[in-house]
Image (cartoon, rainbow, N blue to C red; front, side, top):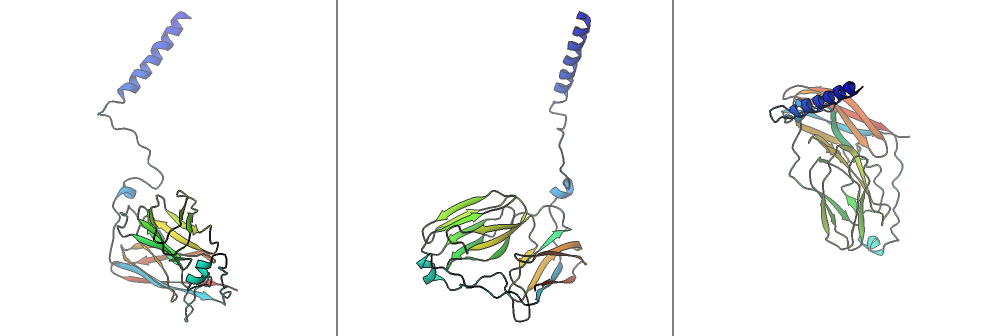
Length: 258
């Protein structure tokens, strides 16, 4: 039994020594590549001369906008220039506004964050813009233009939550997001009617429609893509689209109510 015990000890020692030898500086470390990762994901994403453009329309009669009661804050009653809900922003031709349109699939590589700062303003006791997009790592400047207390409460699922007060007019802060997420809701716990949404993406191919419902995703490389359109009340739709080098592909989405 003594010899058997000695053999086990020697064997374990050999394993430990072998492991130590594998930790030499001239031996490359083992790396675990996440699904969908590897060299292609770490390569610099390409830009191009192709465009995907189109429009978002609403079919049916949307619910009428509601008047927001701001009586809880006299400053809001005085400062507000827009007191109607923004759930459905529809233009004369049926174009649907506040739709976030983006390339959901088909891109490869990583795109550096834009150095342009995006501003989310609290003005007239409303968030402006109501729907917008940024890249991972891009700076969002959040400003209070009202002479009253606001708090900025972001409630993401993938990114870090934050809830910060801005009690003084002119106060400003900067935030960035680390993870792709569509969409991140913003709200003000002081004024329950205030809300906004930001789409966080790893690339710059996104847009938010105005009342005409039009969008344009330019400087794309030629390829096959899944394009998505998101609306806060009507959900998300997707379409497959193929665009050639230097060409423009037209894509239209129709959301239905009623």
